Image (cartoon, rainbow, N blue to C red; front, side):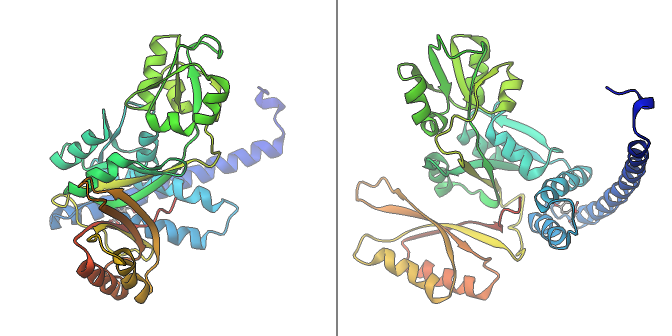
Length: 367
Ligand SMILES: O=C(O)C(=O)C[C@]1(C(=O)O)C=C[C@@H](O)C=C1
């Protein structure tokens, strides 16, 4: 490192400027935090909730649309998410349940969505995440719902059918899988421990590089990393964060078959603890429906959306397990039920469905 005396005077002057700007920024951030505390006092008096996803989405959207640069718009969202996370934490702690242990992609999704000022509640399974959010042990739960390579996370969708919880937000992550091991080599791996989804997402790479090695499904990738940290004969498939968490080498980076592999997460909460978010201007409404098994039933289901000009952004089917070839359809539409056209379309849709449940309405991911 260069001695201060060897540093160019222009550089020293610029750093001095940066120090001054940082001090101004800190003063401004503290002013903002003070205002958030005042908002918190009003909410306490009114008995209303602190976390307002629609307001946070509007703050970020507003800043992005007026950002003069050179700061990139992609940097604006994570910076302000952290600022609002810190302000929110002054108002009240945010307790978030997700599939643990430390180092999972679910944890990364929780931090990306709520910022790092949160109380982490890692759980052993997706069912436990739901349970924590239902019982009140957590304010919110993070549920993986869909992967761009593997399709839906079936267990999450099945749990949505019966849970009283509803979706208040969504977030998605680029998922990069790495082969991790205590020793920095591929030779001599006895088993690869990972979540079944990760094993499936790396199928091609594993079949090519480790064709005869056992693929051992475990509860989460971080659990696989934990096991690999205890036994050098095991390998794991997990994030680089999990590698540093469990003292492992990244033997082969980015081994997922699809380089654009993304996972989408739903943020859930209980209606007794949180109202549904108000319209933010860029919203999505998720529902699950079924129709009786007759010709044209699925077509009839889509007619109300078309007639009212409501866009459908997702359409998934899951067997109803009735043995009758009946299905549940998971549908996302653009918009909020407070918008008349969305309200009208949903009312008409409800009328043609044997089963109809709104899973939630929330601001579209602004990350
Ligand atoms: O506007 C509010 O309701 C606030 O509490 C302030 C604030 C923020 O920091 O901007 C913090 C938490 C809410 O989720 C939304 C916004």
